[in-house]
Image (cartoon, rainbow over all chains, first blue to last red; front, side):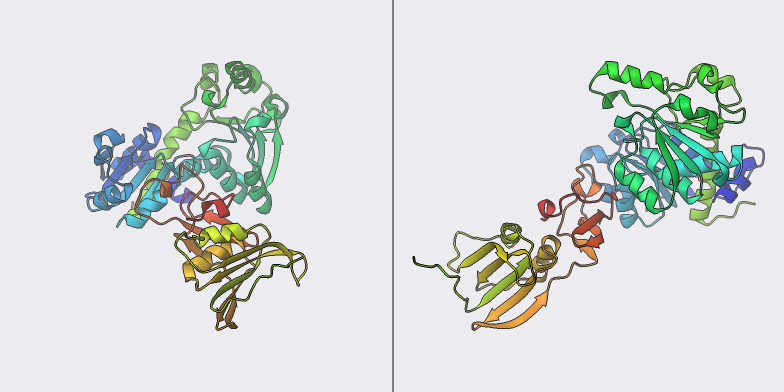
Length: 289
Length: 152
């Protein structure tokens, strides 16, 4: 998949046109707002020469009239060649795949999985830093509730990367997640101070620390401040260290970092397009040449 | 002192080797006692087991279990044996067995799971371990924390 995404790069940038998916339609069913996932799926479909239809919030769909997801998917799958689904409930994509006559891509299911985000994270690391198994990846922020983090850690360990989980004790990786990583013989350590470990990292993967997780706003400010990525912190990092973030960021990375060579989060957002092109073309069986 | 003995039943089912403390949950699965029933029900809790340790026993007169009930019992008492009694004799005896796929007899403990949202789908679990049983939701991937509490 990552190799295929690599091949999609010139098409994703618009440097090479393709009509490979002409006449094909992607159904984008977004029951929850999402900017990047939806835009990049639609961009991917457009770059492949196909079209997208769907909705960006359930208020405009028959869901607001009380239709089940099963029925929405049964109907939508009559009109399209593949479905991407974002839903607020865990397991929604798997349920949808049971009722759909076309392939369903999970575009995020509640606090569950977000597999295409993980694919594009892997792609970004490989593209920007080389072989994934040679990287020491620091995963920073809310590791307890973060949707993308567990899938990412799982995938990184499959590729043999070394991981450092950096979070305050209350937001550290859940025990069962660490246990399942141990069963996979993953290489990882946990740490609460980013400052202490940043010098040894090749990749700093930052996630949002959500304010609503903290009963005490003062506690939130303290924690959020500790994990803020700024020029001062990055002065301790290696020259080639890259900073990634699934976005949107809310103060986790200072704007001054944007202009440094460390900042790769906007490239990361772009890589969502070639990765999703690779996935969609494989799912729809279209040959991009 | 007059001793109260558990009398043998003529027809019915004896569920033996129930994990200690689980007999009342077994009765709940069987939806017993029912107010209209005239048959006797006996539950023995925390009695010594010949195999060592303690066990619970449930005896239900005039009742044979359906396979769904047996599957449910397997989930809370994986070592249980089911003895079907006919005319005071053990007519059949078998061990309970946890099915490979547990469908429609347990609901997911995750309130945000899609199977808890009025979708037309039966909750489904894969069995990660059998004793004690560990179930993983086929839809949301979460492991069920308290199986006995989530039996439907």
